[in-house]
Length: 348
Image (cartoon, rainbow, N blue to C red):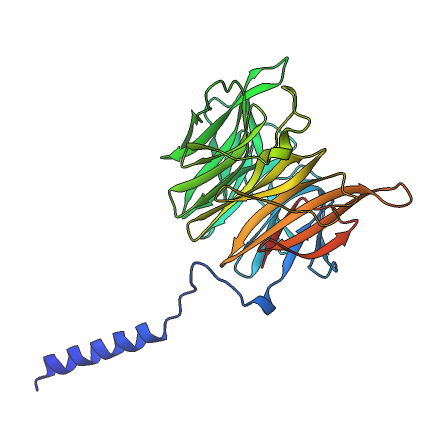
């Protein structure tokens, strides 16, 4: 055997050994049940775990509105009390070095992470690490509560275009990015729909997105920009008139082809936290006998499990107004957290 063939065999062996020793983290980094931690975010910037133990209090936080996880790290968006632009990572503040002409109060309406990039919606701009990408024709645009989502580098932004200032009417819009520019398109309404609202967006598999909201006060979703009207219970129409809202979809996720939409519908005489699983209705009520109203905060998929966090409002026996956070998993209650008000949650 000549030296040329010996050299090739050695090279192939080295390549095989190197490849076999490489370890790539899977895209969906899912922990077993017993190793998971649920983190709850309060408006004041406190983070609690599923045992209602305080994990940390975010420094210099005026308001916290969203928490997300990426493998072993968690990230929080909100308002820094010194009007700085950035986010909190694992409880520590990270400033984005972005040159804004005006010194404004930065309010983040959406946060996402993909690869090494952090995306923030600081209206009227999308920030990507230190880059600024303005939204086209954003003068009459109002961002949704959960207005930004990213999948494999594709960023989606939703909100509403104001059509009538005096009556607070607007129409739903979707912004997408192409070559650094975010341009918008109007989302379709159903027949006789005159007003619509986007509340949230969830992107997945790079070029797919779910959008939640309402049209004429009726809960709807848009699946890849195609409208789907959510069914309602017969009891939703008990006290209905033309000025009554029939609910909305405020958070969404996708899990192995199934679509889960979380929101509210009026059930008998109260607004109730509702999940539509491929259109099928489930009401989430932890204290139904004393419940005044409830709402879905967020819904998320973790592996094959669906987690939902709701808020329930009621008066206790001392006539005190109480807000409880409720954690649900796969449609069943896990625990109620007395007195805890939550703006967002994540599983890490």
